[in-house]
Image 1 (cartoon, rainbow, N blue to C red):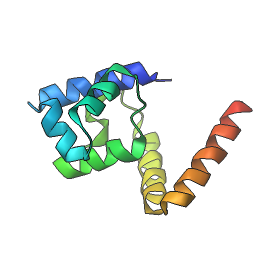
Image 2 (cartoon, one colour):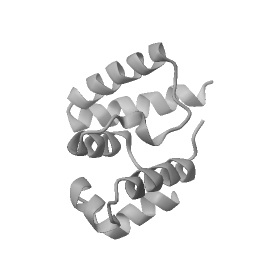
Image 3 (cartoon, one colour):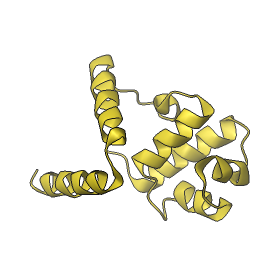
Image 4 (spheres, rainbow, N blue to C red):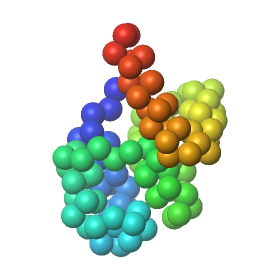
Length: 107
């Protein structure tokens, strides 16, 4: 499982590979450059929704940043779940997030 720090590092690698400054990435994501720095260092968790919106806006595959690519079936399933999640209202996304966290604690 990926830690917040590892995800942040992968995001940093992606951003720099695209020659984007923290300021430019922040404009794309509608956050400050300081917030980008917090994502990249793992101080603040980069939400899947924000990451997907970033990828969509710059037109890249969300898995581009991660060298450990999942299997094709897993990839397809994850994208279907992410698309369904993204279609939910923010209130429903929060409810689903709480439910998933609760279920994960039981594993």
